[in-house]
Length: 290
Image 1 (tube, rainbow, N blue to C red):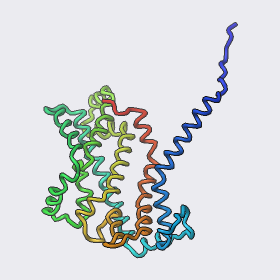
Image 2 (spheres, one colour; image 1 turned 45 degrees about the vertical axis):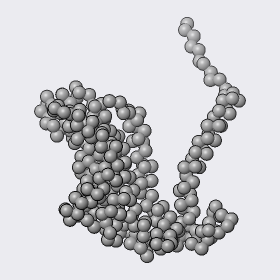
Image 3 (cartoon, rainbow, N blue to C red; image 1 turned 90 degrees about the vertical axis):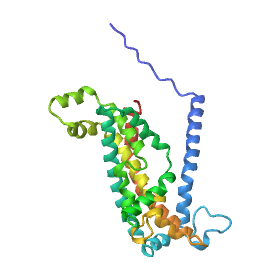
Image 4 (tube, rainbow, N blue to C red; image 1 turned 180 degrees about the vertical axis):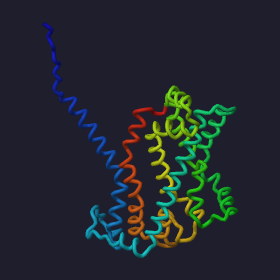
């Protein structure tokens, strides 16, 4: 008769308890450090303007007021800024996903001379800062008559945009993980290139597409330099550009500025919370192996 032995887990020792406790304490300290700017921003937004520089410093505002949020929402065109930012961020995200996926699919599944050289050139553009192309881009938008409109903010992502190289690289890694046998079987069954792209490669790269979409949305939403350069009219300004209205020549409206900054942070925070599982899935399934 066969005897089944069941191993019993050893009780945690005092050293193990100290090690776990130290890890949790370290993580708590790191979390406090990273969350402190957000806490200070919210604390400033809930403080009356006259109480901002009182000594000693009050960690919790007393009294706690919400008039700063009402002020920026009713006395400034903040709803218009919000709508403009949503329009720009959504269109820029769609353009980024389309252009990067098309390019990555071509670099992965099409064979043409200079394919590897083209990939190296695309990756090399990641080292070019936006400040280098800022003046030529402004001249181009001026020639097109797009200044003071939202077009300079969401049309370039349809041609790759500033972060296009990263998106192409990320999706190329995802498409390389698609089994060649699956693509060849679909081609034998009569599928054309668009079928292979739309029905085979894209569904298998959903986590990577979600990650790229989050990056593209956050990059477009948080863009500060673009709106300042291309837009001067209030009706076409975005949230990040509109925050500069709270800074006068000799005075900064800190409470209103922090309230506006907190409202500007909410969409990106919500999107990240609901999409963080795609980040984990992307790393756990395919990683960045090539």
